[in-house]
Length: 216
Image (tube, rainbow, N blue to C red; front, top):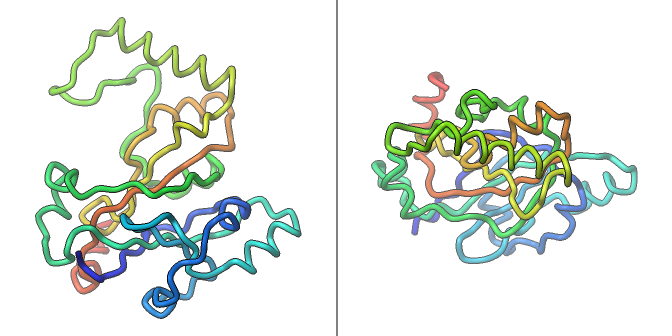
C-alpha cells in the first residue's frame, strides 16, 4: 500500500459532535498531513475514522452552538499513487474502494454548493442509469415514489447516508458515489439535514494533479 496521503478536493461543513466522537489519529499522521486546515479527519482501510487535528475547534464550536465547522478529509490510499489505471478507471478502482467507518451530518445546501454531483436526479430521469442497467418505466416510478414516501414521512435516515468518494474523478476531484436520487428528493421537499459517509481508493501524485487541475 502506498504511504501517500490523499486529500479531499473539497472542504465539508460537518456538525461538531460528529468530529468529537472520533478517536485521535496515530501521532505520526500529524506530521504527514501537510495542510493548513484546522480540522482534519483521516480515513483508512485499516482502522476507524480518526481525528488528526481540530478537537479544540470542534469543542469550541459545540459550546457556541455553531451548526457546522469546515473539515478536510484525508485518506490512506489503497492504490499506489503510480498505479494509474485503477485510479482513473471505475471498473478497476472498484476492487480497491473502501468506505470510512463513520457517518457525518451536513446540510443539503452546503453539499450542493460543492458541485460534486455527477448529475441531478428527479422524477423524470429516476433510475435511468445506463443502457446496461434497464428497468421498466413502471418500476422506476414505484422505486422513486417509495423513496419519496420514506424521506418525506421519516426525514433522512442515517442508516442510508449519501456516499462521497474522495478524489473519485481522475484521482483529483471528489464526487458523489451513491445517493443522487436522495439528494434530488431532499432538494425538492426541503429536507436540509442529511447524513454522509466517505469512500476512498487512490489519488494521483501531486505533480500530475497540479498539471490536470485546470480541467476540473
